[in-house]
Length: 104
Image (tube, rainbow, N blue to C red; front, side, top):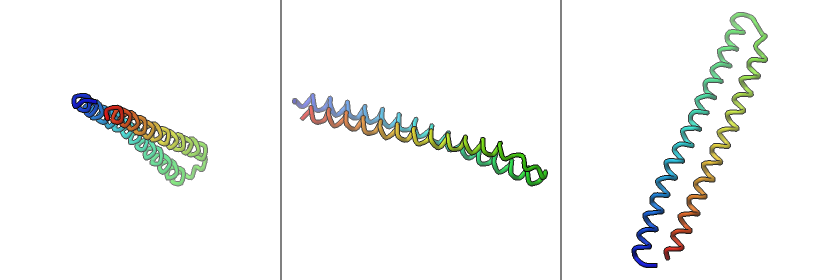
């Protein structure tokens, strides 16, 4: 391949990497949002437990179980998002490598 082909491949790979970083940031934002939801749910558990103790009402068990199930669901969503992000990184890396090798 000629010099200009190598330059074009380099520019394409740079654009691909920039796009990948933007997509990764979007995944990180999603994860941060889910983690914030988990913190809020844990705060809700604490408030419900304290209110139950303060008012001597032990009937909050079902509410706490529901919140705990929500936390578990959010944690599973985080894992899925992180896997998507890792898949994106691998796919983009493979594409850049293929372009680089074809330019040699």
